[in-house]
Length: 196
Image (cartoon, rainbow, N blue to C red; front, side):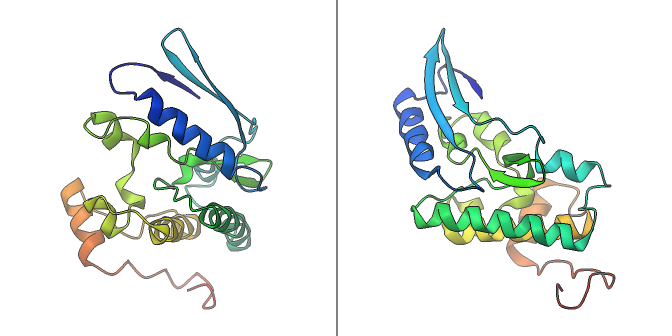
């Protein structure tokens, strides 16, 4: 991972976040970070390599959904195991989405927790890095907790099962309103009753 060390990056915050990430490593479903380096006005984060790309890329190969319900549940079991590990270390991911889950083979590895916090809160980059489709209702007010990650995981599972998001709107304001006020769109009838 490579970040430009401009006005938006707070180096001390970056070091603290990377230290947190390094301490939270050591679980098979959490991508290990090896080190952080600063070189020529860039922050370089060295981590393990995930040859399978992101969960988002994996989903795109089968029309935005998992190849089967069983594969979706298998993938989600690994994701939840990684989240459980992070939460046991008092780490809240805050931006869990398919882009931040990398695959080693078909094995999910959570990555990028805390990276969005490296960028200063006032920058446009922070807004761009968080995906509203995966944000919990309280996230829009800046409140993040372990429940925030569980919500995001639920949205990811819904997406893996259906190829869609549980909330949709033509505008960001409509999406935020739907997430805050509406119940999610029910899973379709082709999803086995036990999963629904």
